[in-house]
Length: 202
Image 1 (cartoon, rainbow, N blue to C red):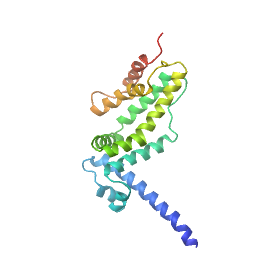
Image 2 (image 1 turned 180 degrees about the horizontal axis):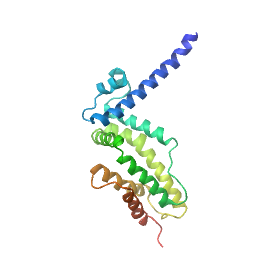
Image 3 (image 1 turned 180 degrees about the vertical axis):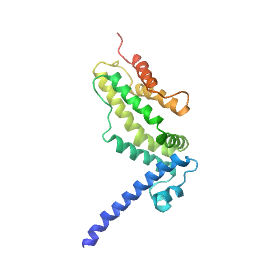
């Protein structure tokens, strides 16, 4: 009886350990070899598992990489929320500067570009990305902007989805297209310019 009761938790722990090893291996390898050379076989070898173990949980290397990002964001953010000090401009500048720092981090640059490329070619992965990461993050951003709108800091008829696009869209486009440097000054200017068009008249 004792052995039977222990078998399930032990199996669950092994399963969790294998998943963590696979996600870590995928994230590290794509930074080392690039997405084109990333393979399920390579991930399996680095993680110390059989490739069928990976295929049991994920349909493609893009799906593995996405879950690696999701796990990383959950570890770092915990209960994610934008700062709310009452000063919307300062809070947004803090967030945008942090985003610039992350996009400029060599450890994240190649994996994030690979994920963006895969999403553009895989409608199924794109749908999962929207549901599990993009839409939840958009709601977090909209909640902060809604609080500012309620406080009279933004126009009462402001479209919050459009406001999110106006704030984060140019930053991500500059990074993705490599059209210019990503600097804290650029982040600050972007926030100031966007807010100028969002504040109530007068």
